[in-house]
Amino acid sequence: MSDLKSRFEAASVAVKSLPDRPDNDTLLQLYALYKQGAEGDVSGPKPGFFDFVGTAKYEAWAKLAGTSQEAAMEKYIALVKKLTG
Image 1 (tube, one colour):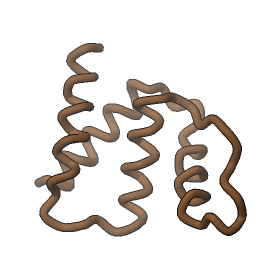
Image 2: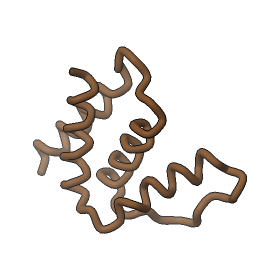
Image 3: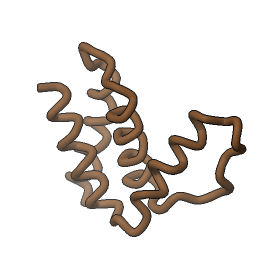
């Protein structure tokens, strides 16, 4: 697990230095996978109706409910690797 966690943390650093900004869907996917890998299933109340960005993030994360943290970490690492080439 510690190897996976260190690769996950390295990917979270690498994603900040992407040459091009990913599209919004990819950004939401990165966010959701990161949160699921770091914290597990979504928690807390859903943001208000007019908080469009917050609601989109919450819903993207909520779709991953039930996914193990390890599986989310692996998917996050793979996506970052794909984006960094």
